[in-house]
Length: 362
Image 1 (spheres, rainbow, N blue to C red):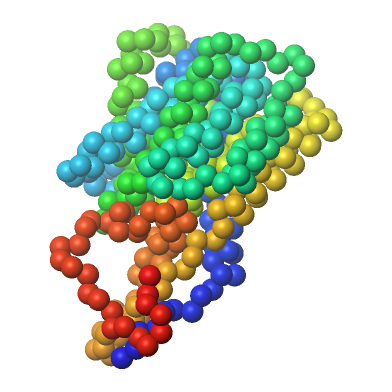
Image 2 (image 1 turned 135 degrees about the vertical axis):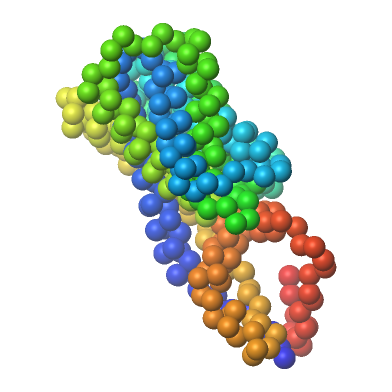
């Protein structure tokens, strides 16, 4: 029997990547509302409390629903990812939101794709292209036009917090991409691990380092509920799903939906105006995201091997399993990371396909 590769479907792959990108962008768009909710709904000067209540309840809910705990090396990996993606990132995000006016915090965070670019080259073997650097510069310039106002002040603590938050988020993206998700663990469980780790890390620091508010209003309760359920539980499930399917750099550029959303919400609810320069900045941000996506290109479709005999046709007919494995390869092939790095190593040598008369397979 001659094994033939599955036909290439670049147009379908492109449409799939566009849908995944649009869905994933919903997460940073929701996070863009954090600045408005923090200043208008939460108790003042409580970044640790806001971070803890955003992460821990959502993580415990997901653990209760999935009832799956890490095993082996994943205790260490879940802890590292929980600190980078949730615990430390949340704290620096809220600290920047309390110390920097308007969307200036979002401007400071624009260094994140550059960090992802460097870490991706070191840990994922990704190639740094001139187009990527140009997209980073265009995005930074766009956000600057979008959020900087003449009266915007720069606070040293806020700027440092924003930079450290960018480092945490960029590192979390790259390591999440490198390690993938354990075999047989659902996305909900994977998200619950990280939210719980981040919340448990923040809890003692909050109790020791920050006085609790004397009273909470229903407005405060509503703000905390929004950040925990919408801004953490739902948004991070969407975000981690996108990271698993998109190249790391392309995913990091989607975070620019956050300053866009923050600016629009400021215009709608806080009386902020949008001038020609801000509209130009918004167009620059969108252009940078599109440029980054085109620079990555559609991940090549991996040839799939049909079953060796008709007796195995039942397994071959499992379209959902084939789509799952095909999507896993698409998500990593554009980064130079072999799909086998996301799963357990095989217990024996891989079967060798029967060679065909044409050129040798890759």
